[in-house]
Length: 621
Image (cartoon, rainbow, N blue to C red; front, side, top):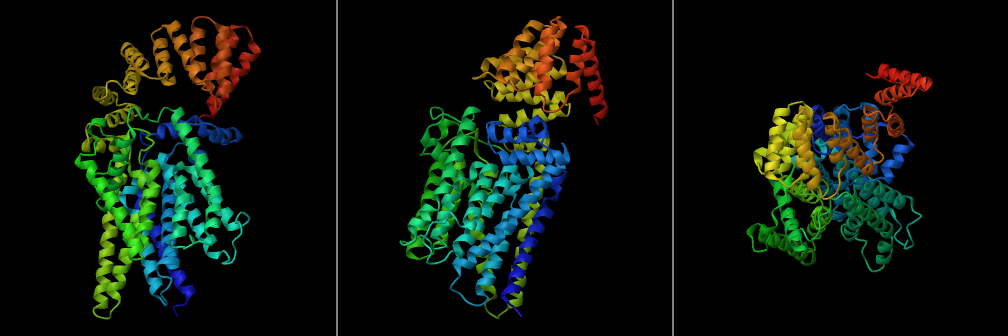
């Protein structure tokens, strides 16, 4: 008997199947390594995540790191480190699991929205068939589309999948709240547990990635359609209940702008004016739709175009402007003449959720990025999933050739799953390591300086210094005014022992840098120390310490320089400071301080430190 309970069970089984299929397809990502793009800064070169205590939690919430603020994501990395150390398997496992859960939530959300809005006037099993098929199809598209590989297979994009988990959960909680409120209850919602739970989930999504700031507008779209809550007698309540959401969004936006500004990541309007930014953003809106329909040539970095080429009268910008305007107008016409609001609701969701990453406030050198579509793609995928559900229902509504039609639909669906899985598996392999990733970028667009720079970093990490130097040379050739390129090449020369070449490149990096950089002075100090230019080394170490007084290594290295010229008291002070600042005990720090204590005749302290150094060495794996 096809009871409501059995139908609900069937829905959850099918939704769970979507989760399982998604996770299975992404299993090869567990064999991938870290990549040389943000992963060093966030994870394997980040000492802050190596201790999980109150001090770390305060740091995660109160400090900007790498021009960003996403404390919950940072905490998730620390949990990974506590369990897995620096084994990338565990980090990838968390990303894949979160993506699988998000796929599950997407399928449930689509079914719920179809049930409560699109076909609520239908009776019997008609609505059930439509909603179930639409949910499964949308879940498959969301889970298996290769455009989402970047958000899942790139460990540093944990913020995408974590934010989406809470974002989608918040929407589901809001729907539960909105559909169970009493019809005659026009009071304030602030004491409603379901409402407060929705707000909590929204806060967690913001702590994972600030892109969730658009949720209040998304909820208003849902209020308009399909919930139908934007009516004259409920408008005030619906508006007031969004105020805490807007307050959180506004606060998050200020914090992340401040973080990006303090890290020098925000591009001034004098560099790229507002109107060209809008044109590039409109081109991205259309470009993402193209990649959803034809996901080929997906690369990690889409460079921002040269400012002189961005003009309204250019075909590549005028056509997207017309398309966006035409689609928007068409959706409004259909919504208010044909009473089909879904087109406008999904289009508005797509545009609204893309707004933070369209470059109106320009951050970074990219024009668009696959990862930016993780949440916005739900709109177009929902539309495609619903279209597939309606086609299936149309094909099977009559008894004529029903078996043949059903078989054809299943075969087409299977082919879609296989095709998407194949493309996704290929994309997962591209994200295997820094070589595969940036070699693909160079293959498609050899003009991208960042690709050579980051592939050079990978070659440096695996001690292929000749290949690294070749890539850094190419990066300098493509962007000769970039201080980062000279820094990278200088650091490579330093590891090769070419100290004079390293010194020249690091000096050039310092000269070109618009603001003093800790890394540049620190590495030049190391080079000076290797060349026995200890006075110059001391000067640069002091500069590095002034730029980052909370870093332990520069104190340790400056202590070594002081020790070499016989300034033992100064060396002792620096070693002590290094020990105090180190996030975990370091045997070298204790050993060198013990040696200085011995030279100063303080034998009891020397014995204590040298013994501690030996204990730490014995504990080391």
